[in-house]
Structures are given as C-alpha cells and as structure tokens.
Length: 284
Image 1 (spheres, rainbow, N blue to C red):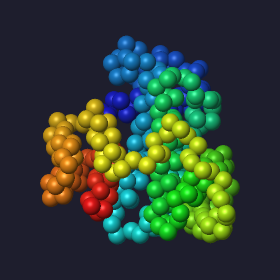
Image 2 (tube, rainbow, N blue to C red):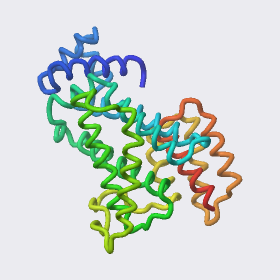
Image 3 (cartoon, rainbow, N blue to C red):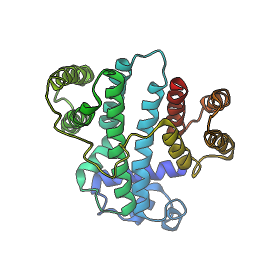
C-alpha cells in the first residue's frame, strides 16, 4: 500500500468516526484528503471498496504484530499468548477513530466483499484461539477443544467490548494473566465433565476443520500468489512444487523457508506461511 492509499484510509476513518459511514460522501472524503473527487477513483473503485480496505489495513497490522511474536523462539507458549493479548488490546483500544467508526453504525451487509472479510476475521480469530489452547494445554482432549475455543473467544471479546466503551473500566495490564488464569480453572473443570457440550465446532463452513500443515501451506500460498511480488513468487512456486512430491525434501524446504524469513518486508500472509512451514518441518 502506497502513502496516498494510506492517507485516504486515515482521513476516511476520521470522517467516518465523526459523521458515520453512510452519511459521508466521496466528495467529502476527497476534500478531506485534498484531492479531486475523480482522483479518489484512481485509488479505490468505490466507497464500499475503501471500507473493505480499511478493515484489511487494520487487520493486517494486527496480524503482523501477532505473527512477529509467534515467531519469537525465546518465548514460551504462555508468554506468547500473554503478549499477544496485550497487542490485541493495544490495537483495539489505541485506534480511537476506528473504534468510533465501528460504534457509529452497523457494518454488516454494506457489501458482499465486506461481509466475506468480516466472516473471515471471525473464523481466523476462532482458529487462533483454538491453536493457543492446543499449545498452552498440550494434554487437553480433542473433544474439549470446541468448548474451550468458544469460551476463550467469548471471554476475550466480552472484556474487549467493555474496554472499547470505557477505557478505564479495569486495569488493562491485568487482563492477559486474568484470562489465562480463568482458562486454567475452566479447563480443569471441563476435564471432569462426562461429556462436552459442543460435539463439534458450530460453524459448518468454517475453516476450523483440521487442515494438515501441507493443506494449510497450499491454501496460504494460493492466496499469496494473488498479491506477492515476483521475487517472492519464485520461492512460493518452488515450495508448491516441492509439496506436490510424495516426499518433500526437508533440506529444500528449509532453504526456501530461510529465504522467506530473511525478507524484511514480510506480509502477514508470508509470516503465517513461515510459521506453518516451521510447524510442518518440526513434525516430520
């Protein structure tokens, strides 16, 4: 994203926070940005496309920060979780214009693309919490994962929702450890249950189905090939080719992984690919 795109996004969020999305015109956005109305369409096809870009911009900034911590080998699973929850809070409560915009009005059904992206964010959040539970509680029965994932997701969203409406409602520094301590107690009690409440994840179309690392890597690369630079495309295609073999070579994959890791301008998707490939190579 170039500086002009970012400037239009920043100014638009200010306007949407002040007036609301529906009440703000493209003309007002253009005036706020100091550009002609026609120039706006050189960057975004419509106001709806701009709104999707806003959500993608903030979501990618968050996921990039989370993945940086995920790739920090010096941190334990619990320490990663605690720091990542802190990052979540900083992003959610620090972007005051974005929060004001979200509180102004309902964001569903503005466009099909936005609905799909919001659903994607919801699914990815559940997948993330599921992985955190698996990492932090390695002995947990797989039958309890759906209940534990929904409980952790609900616990986080409940307290974040309060913070969004009232920043000083509680000491934010205490939330990460508070959540982890509550999950310790909840999981201990669930393990004594005869039967879990949820037999499976309650989202039939959701990608919470258990993808193998190879399947997930193929999925990530397919999405990356739509947007990545030519330099990365060669490495991505090489990874795809290696994974198409019956027995992929760990040595070749490790060299390609090293290439991706050295990329200082990794996208969130690239960081996710690095993480998934590390998981695959660790377990073969």
